[in-house]
Amino acid sequence: MAFDLNFHIYSLLQEEPFFAALSRSIDKRADRSIPTAGVGIDEDSGYFVLHYNPEYFEKLSADQRKGVLKHEFYHLVFEHVTSRLPSEGMTPYWNIATDLAINSYLKGQLPENCCMPGEGKFATFPSHKTAEWYYDQLTANKSPSPSDEDGGGKGNPGADERSSEDADSGNEQFDSHEEWGKASHQAKEIAKERLKESVKKASQECEGGKGWGSLSTRMRKDIIDRILNATVDWRKVLRYFIKTSQRASKQSTIKKINRRYPYIHPGRKVSRQAKIAISIDQSGSVSDGMLSSFFAQLNELAKLAEFTVIPFDDKVFEERIFVWQKGKNHTKERVLCGGTCFDAPTHYVNNHNFDGHIILTDMYAPKPKGSKCQRLWMTDHTGASMPYFTTNEKIIVINT
Image (cartoon, rainbow, N blue to C red; front, side, top):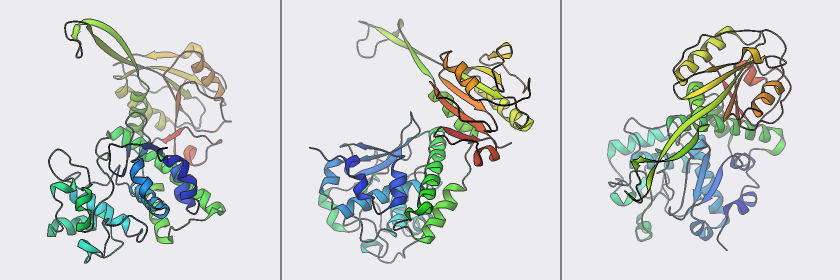
């Protein structure tokens, strides 16, 4: 039976509460197309994914498996996958620099011949420097120089593995970074927001009595400062939510050539149309500034989708619902002012076959019933930090 990482996660991370909690929000996928392991972002869902070669993991000791997992998770919390790139973009030197920064914290826990400060080719490099510091040193000295075999050759700009025959020559990289540059800006933004939530939950679990495992006080502070205090571009997250709500409508057409059977079968025409419900909380605590910012962004996004705007407080006011057609602008409007019940718009949306549901609100009302389509909450800093209820659905802060 092939090695399945999901069956081993609990035992591997039993003494690492922070990484164990973080692991629950990361999809683990067996992938024999990569030699070892690597993290990336699923473009369709916006979730982080850990790809791993089961044959590689099967040969490692339990401590090495744990070390590799922590190495990959550190790439996420240090934002190597989403934000931090030199002006030159993904380069072999940046690949090495990020590994040196991480491996400083993992001495004695990783497979042999990995990039390690103070060892082998990097014997003169001190430990616990930033990826940017190591990158500056590597590019200034051009030594050790990544060769084509390092993954720096043409046609493979992100891979980091060498062949097993080269592994005895000194410090090497053992994981793949080639997924880092593939995700769109929108996917990265929503992945960052999800990571922020995952780190917050993991931190709360650790502070709640489980402890932090091997994480030092310095590392805890660095992670919390870097992730929990980060800002997310709500406009990009909103755009990504709408684009991922789109459903494909396919139909045959002789006007399009079939790539597989040209001139034998008709081609396929694909049209995409997102039908998005926009529920606007009419309570007085939803500020005019938040309404104005939100409507201004919807004017931009109306090029992508058709919005149905649903005013509500403790009920939906169906006589004031309107469809926001593509390319048509609207100014913010408050039509009511009263209490709030999230069940009312949810019930309406569940009965009208929408692809996505966005609720603009102060978050101050009881938890609603489940939604049949994906649901996104847009609110201000107060609503996000002190919501009336807890939810696993996305809550995004609108900066006015």
